[in-house]
Image (cartoon, rainbow, N blue to C red; front, side, top):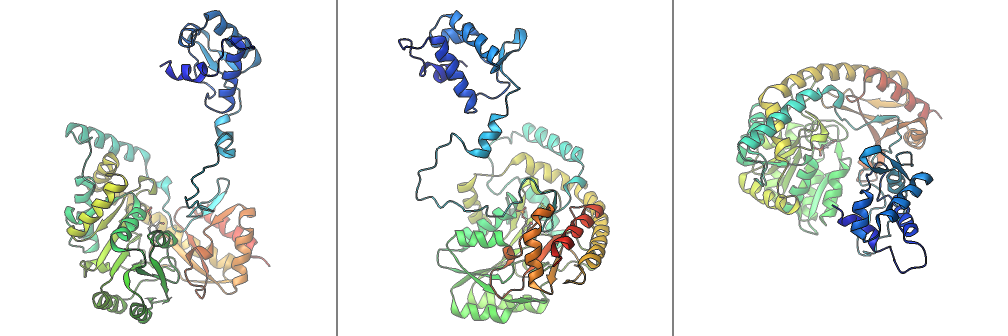
Length: 488
Ligand SMILES: Cc1ncc(COP(=O)(O)O)c(C=O)c1O
């Protein structure tokens, strides 16, 4: 236990040096406190142990400790020993903010990001108008805690707290296969499911097995930027295609297939991201014909099919063409984003290829979280939760539409979405969006920038505003702030 202390101090102490040893110890300890390696509240070794460890007289250590206590760097914790004073500012935090003491990296060939890939909201926002997240406050923590407890006990009993299947926990794969069979019309079995850490990882894995550098991948002119970032990262050529209120423009898809070696298209057919429109059945069928003709895969991101308020949800494309589709889903909306559970449904051979990629990345998922999620699905907790929140979200959706009409109706054009958790708001005048985006932060409201959805300059920018994660009052407040920001 004393080795680190020995290393910390011994090399800084020169017994033959000019300055007294106790003073050198004082300087060495202050130095370690200042650079944040010794944090407030840390216990120091006893004077006897430290004296022995660094080979000095015990009185020397006692003298140094006394001096540091007198100067306020250390405090006596009575019979329990001596600690680094807790009244010191949290040096760890300062360090994290300033990067002080950390050398600049010298790996010149690393491609450092110039901004966060997902343009994360700053810490000090007061109101976040997200792109359609659930309200995490509505999920009872004790239900989750119980599921985790059960998962720990069961996995321990079955000796499964070891390395496991890269496709994920068999319990969760079976539970998700069951859910997809009954709710999404997919002919799923546990072998056709690969669990991932969120659907973001699922898209990444799909891209890894489908795309080689230079291959083309089609995306819509307005789409989900984190998926585009993945395709770029894989060295693919990202080719935008147009879309309208019926979904993606299939004629343009055909043109691009004639021009490029297209290997995949990324789509959110159920609720187009960000515009929320559903891809119409005739276009779905035409796309499948094109996929067969030009031999490309459809990455179908079915990210928020669980919430529908008007009509029954359309079945996913994977339900009628599983051989052409890599179907991606997520528990982020159904349960909680922080669980980081996504999944892929695909033919078992494809799942094997995905599993090989998982082995390269993180070997396997988190057995306990996955087992806990399986338990929540099987015990009916998820069903109960969805029933409860759907009512809450339905009311929030109505109230949100009302606030939007009242406060921004004159400037905007929007449809109330049939399902999903967000509105797509178009603006009559592009200058209004610019004003909102420039002033939003000063008004304490965060929203995803309109340009983050755009992959082709001719696409009409808009704002995607989630209605589910805020209470009606919070949302009203947010929309009023947008109205202020929009004022000429
Ligand atoms: C289009 C789309 N896909 C997927 C996701 C879910 O991502 P994840 O499962 O990684 O939390 C989101 C979440 O906002 C989304 O908007």
